[in-house]
Image (cartoon, rainbow, N blue to C red):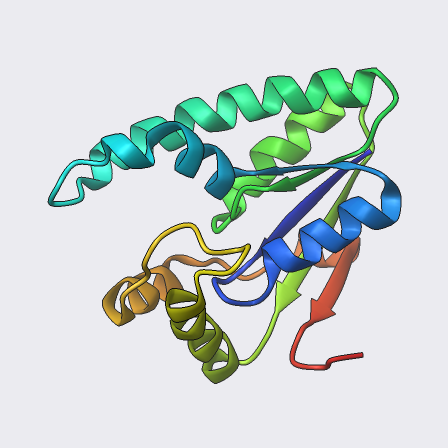
Length: 166
């Protein structure tokens, strides 16, 4: 089983993914962790989006092959790759289906003000879900990049609103 975690920044995707991994005894694979561990020391100054995205694509390819091995060995995987775009989510849904793997989508959401405050606080705290500094400009740019779930996605999806502490 693959659990595909998606939502806007600050919604609580990584926190949710970590809890879900513990609950289902699965392996949490996070793009932020891979990028931080593999490339953060080499990050050019000023930041270059082309440089970053090339490495994100490489990580995603390797994360998928790792996920496939885990699932084919009987394990569960929690994919925490952002999945901001419908096209990207659709690709992973198709890959899972091609390989006969059950996939479940988890849409993590919260109010804009809650998410913004969480991200700014995470910048200060540098807690377990912190990977890099997110400026207000970056936050608002990424906000516009997110594509809400499609009609097809909404037919079979777990929706988690993290504004509600229960």
